[in-house]
Image 1 (tube, rainbow, N blue to C red):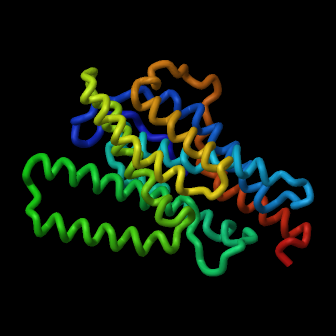
Image 2 (image 1 turned 90 degrees about the vertical axis):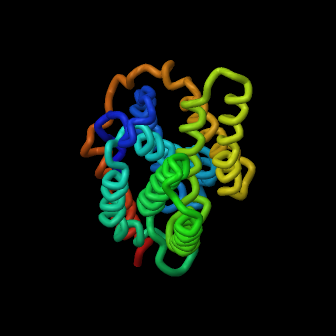
Image 3 (image 1 turned 180 degrees about the vertical axis):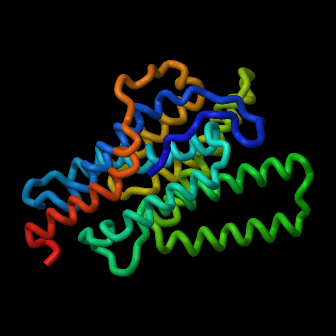
Length: 270
């Protein structure tokens, strides 16, 4: 999942740029928690009774990946749609080894990169929609048509991607919350409005999992990210060892391929 982008002001020039040093730490944490989730789910024997790790540590990965994509798409990249296409390309490479994982559901499911790419595309559309409405550049018929098409696309895509409909909402809702928290003034009314904008993404995070343990880790991850957007990003030092780009780009498809090979050698795919 390609999250390393050249820092710059967004295409509209309307947002100042917060510090993104926290994403250096986020990359290491995201890969670690994702790997723990997938190892406990697919590779390690059930008799080891490590399901708790996937329901706790593993629940950090997706909201963290979604947060980094939303953050870079909102604050750092000059062309967020091109950024979404790069994520999609990684998803295409990873899809075959992903499909080799033992799954409890039938049918084709597209991996998390598709969820992130489509979610970022939706977030970009929402940001552009807001700006056009503020300029009065969008008529009511065009607004109804665009919203209708967006809802239809979300309803259809949610049937095919990992984390389904709720997963597709994470990045657009993150972007709304991050922008509100970052732009919020010091007045009480402004802070209350910014806080209210954070509630939808926290609600969706809570709905994504069934167990209380999983819910708590997912919501806590989202809350930590929102605190960063509200100003805590200034307190995060630069990571001592940056993630090598090739490792970052190759880990997602590569670790699925390694798990698939292990399962094949162990007879799990036969």
